[in-house]
Length: 212
Image (cartoon, rainbow, N blue to C red; front, top):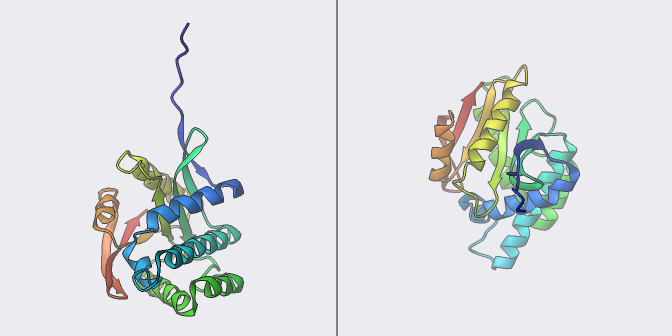
């Protein structure tokens, strides 16, 4: 007698401490070819191992700062497996561009002083452009597991973020900065609007916002 397998449930969850390492792996793979991070981390002027080490350090320290700052880390699970992840920052949080002093120190030691300063200046510029909004979420990182792109996980994740924004009383919406055209199209198809183009280190991107 054959057994009929039940379809694994897909659900949105807040990440736990046990999920952080898997989330870091997903983010590393998603942002390995990001043009802005490649430029800031000097991918072309250094050997591949040096770039990859800096990228892993950046993602690790960012995730640690988000976790310690109690920022929303949201994942899409299929069964017991993490398939997609999003890292959000509340605009009203004390977790500003400089993060905590130990985050900044660790990042400077692993990625370099200039890299750390460039990342801080990038975030400060984006915050200034969003100053017109009283309270909002900023989508700092988003990733879908390799091989699962264009299967709906990204949209599922963005709609989970919609639920988070809708359930936050004083939130005006969510912002994101995108440097890839295909991702810009995805966000716009999910209701985001272009606020203005921004350029960092001669890498162009779009600052997008979705109103609550």
